[in-house]
Image (cartoon, rainbow, N blue to C red; front, side, top):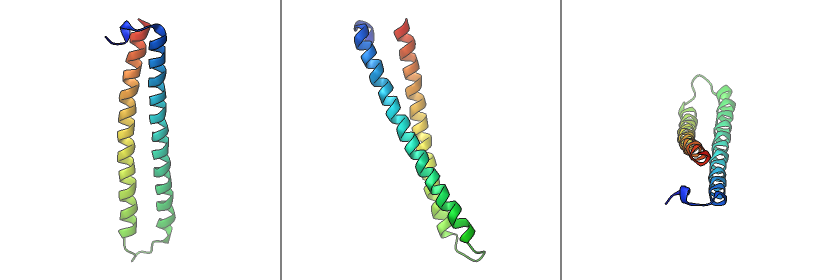
Length: 96
């Protein structure tokens, strides 16, 4: 079946739903960026307080948290890129 056997109104509705899904993913990425920004700010605050003999455990912990957030962000970005590519193809096919 697919979208080619549906009315223009149904295709438009489907396209709107897909756009809303992409918007939700973009909001998720912004949320992840804010978490990373917060973690980096906490790291910046902690660095000046570190004395030469201090343990690096706190620093390493903050770095691990930031690395996890970056990995999550990369995953989100790859997902969004894939969705945008599929959305672009859908729009191209809808125009034809």
